Length: 386
Image (cartoon, rainbow, N blue to C red; front, top):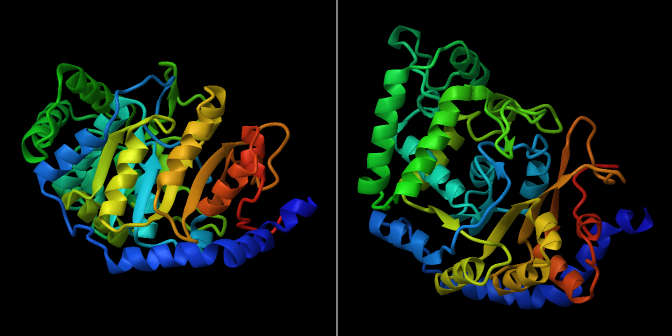
């Protein structure tokens, strides 16, 4: 408990005494020489996604939606730290869009070892492209049609939008037309070629959203039903620690920001293994070439599996290549298991944590992470009084 209670002071001591001069100089040089694009053409987007990607791998779940009800618990602390702009890296499905909306990066890369996850992000990109409003986005995502006479105002409360959609039945005609349009937009407007396997993945994912609607959830090993995992509706409506909703779909402004990033082709999906030899290294090279610093790297609980596959050290080596500064952070979602995590919040299956990336690198070099438990309990940034 003593070590944990001094997390922040330890970080600040290391930060300002040892690392600040170096990282600040790097950050200033980067800012002065930034060549970050304001937008990418479809050709550049498609080429970059494919060139950065590795061969796809297997994972045991269908991450249709986030299963992290604690994802908003770190947002206020992120703001206090000054996590804004720069480059964002993340993994998994739609929770990335909320972090992107809060951080407002210049560019974002969404990595996943499963190619299906990348196809799902291309599906999302197409739906954003086709949907000027939040209600249209969600209706198109789950193959529902909102009657014109019942259409809500563009700035309607998100709870009203969700309640309306929950009452609507599947529109099979809309499903077929939407799927065909999404496929066409990806291949023709985004210039992203889809193999036969990709098209089957696209249909599987879109059909799953049609079948389950807003009740869709994280699915393990092909099982059906939510198995106790939160539904998409619950994730969207989830409040933060102060009881305030904060999903990117809650406000028109944040939806339009994420949609704008997509329309400028600045949210780039990449097939990548965190412990692999290509994806993160290639992203690092791109960021350095364009004078961009990593503001946040959302890893969910991927590191848990890296320890299991003995590739955690390779991941740390990849992280070392990233351009960072003293504010660069990890965002982690840690499963709550025995023994309980010191920062866990009652009623949540995971606890979301922040850690400065430069602190992580120093700790790794000192051998402080023999296990995932050590990684997630040493020198994290406290977000609430415990």
